[in-house]
Length: 292
Ligand code: HEC
Ligand code: HEC
Image (cartoon, protein in one colour):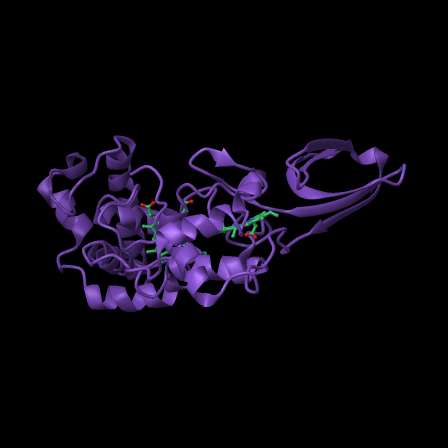
C-alpha cells in the first residue's frame, strides 16, 4: 500500500473511532448509519460511512477468519457470547460494533483487531445482519435439565444461579447469553478444555476473580489445602475451598504453593449423564440469559 493510501485508511479508522465515542458515552441505542448520529454534518458522515455501502459477503468471510473461533461460525456463540440476537448489550448499531472491533472490550477476552476501515465496516454489517436471523434452537428439555442441575449434578455446590448457590465456579445467571450451546456442552464433558487463563494473549488484564485458578498449597506445619484463588499479592494468597470456606495465607508460612493453570476444579460429567441428559442440561443453561 502506498503511504498516502495507508494514511487515508488510518485516518478513516480514527474517524470511525472518534465519531462513535460520543454516541457510546451517551449510551444511546442508535440506528445504523444516519447523518444525525453523533452530531455529524452530512459531509463528515459521508466520509465516515464511505461512499460505497458495506459488502456484507466480504464481512461474512472476514468474520469467519477473525471472529468465528470465539463467536461461532454463525455468531451462535462459543467461548465468546452469541452475537446472533436481536438485542445485544453493547452492539447497539453497526457503528458501535465497528468501535468494538477496533478497540476490543477492555478487561475481557474480546481483543482489539487491526483491520482496514473497509473490513471493519463489512464485518460490522455482517454482525448486525446476524441479529436479524432467527435465534439458535437448542434441542433438549430445559425442565428436566433443571432437575439434573439440582439433584444428580449438584451444580449449586459450586455455582450460583439467580442468587442461589456456591461461589467456587462462575455465576451462571447469564450463562446463556455469554456462551453458545456447543461451548456449554464441552464445559460439562471436558471442563479443562477452556479454563480462562490470565496469561493468554487475549486476557491481558482480566481481573483475578474471572480467572479461575486451581491452587494447592501446604503450610509449614504440614496442612494441605486445595481451592480456587480469590486474590493474591506479593505477600499473601486467599483461596476458597470446596466447602466454600475462605482461607488466607501469608506466603512466608507456606512450604509449597502450586498453581494449576489450565486445570479445572469442576468434575467431568461425561460419565454421569447420558447424551440426552446432557442436552437437557445444556438447554436449561442456554435458557439463562440474565437481565435483558
Ligand atoms: C478470543 C475470543 C474472541 C474473538 C477472536 C472475538 N471476540 Fe468478540 N467477544 C469476545 C468475548 C469474550 C466478548 C464478551 C466480552 C464481555 O462482555 O465480557 C465479546 C464481545 C463482542 C461483542 C459485544 C457484544 C455485546 O453487545 O456485548 C461484539 C460486537 C463482538 N465481540 C464482535 C466480535 C467480532 C466482529 C470479532 C472479529 C472481528 C470478534 N468479536 C472476535 C471474544 C472474542
Ligand atoms: C467442584 C465445583 C464445581 C461443580 C460441582 C460444578 N462446577 Fe461448573 N465450574 C466450576 C469452576 C471452578 C468453573 C470455572 C473453571 C472452568 O471453566 O472449568 C466451572 C465452569 C463451568 C461452566 C463454564 C462457565 C463459563 O463462564 O465459561 C459451566 C457452563 C459450568 N461450570 C456448569 C456446571 C454445571 C451445569 C454443573 C453441574 C452439572 C457444574 N458446573 C458443576 C466448578 C464446578
